[in-house]
Length: 120
Image (cartoon, rainbow, N blue to C red):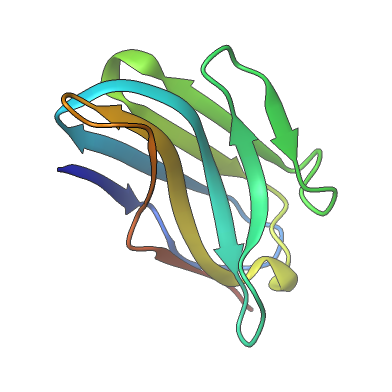
């Protein structure tokens, strides 16, 4: 079994910063792309940013220049540094990873989600 566990969400004022973490655990052979998605209240889930195993990134236009993704391969962990936060960034943030477990095939895995609320 593969698990993704997120941490770091919370309530912050507009203009503030938060750092999310997502650690993958289990019988992991390889991890390809990892990324962050979010689902604002009443809206569909959307891509925030993804990062490949080689470090290529793909940011949503709405977060470009404010958010930064990084990855620690040794720890199977991906981070999302969020700066200059806006009320419209309020959402449940989900971690996603493309993982090949030992004895298994490539599959997409999701974390349980962490709430990020931007409000004064």
